[in-house]
Length: 200
Image 1 (cartoon, rainbow, N blue to C red):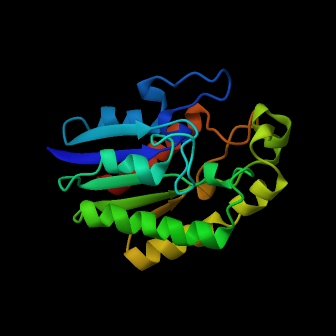
Image 2 (image 1 turned 180 degrees about the vertical axis):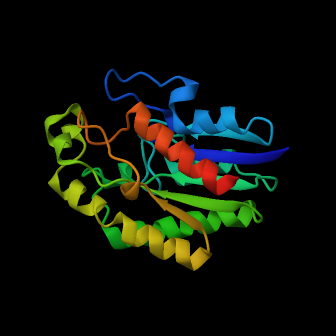
């Protein structure tokens, strides 16, 4: 059976902005893929709260470029990446050029192991201003918001270089007005539908 790796942050994990719980499998995009594709693909859900793409976080599991090594293999058919938002946290002070170069290296490291896998980049939504009035204001500031607006340019550039598919989530979803970061169930369903259209 073909294999899909869904690797990402809290929006892949299925973080519920209302109460911080995890959405049930039918309410998070990676879980919906797992259910809908169960007869065609083995779907591996590997979302993790607060996971960065390239910035060194507090653990290996929350540091994307380190954690993904535990989940890569040469038999993966599709790798879906949803990362980048947490790298915009102001404590990392990561400028966009550094992020772009390191994210490019991250994609290269994936292709070195999973040579035949199709990579689908999910470009993160820009961070909503309402985050400044949420609990996440301790992690993200105005500079984080401005940086997040530049991520599509970076993701499109990398997708073009590596001939990877890109889905710009800014075009199909909106983040919650509760915290400016996470999705409600309706938007998880939109992401899943877009991915299903692509995969099938």
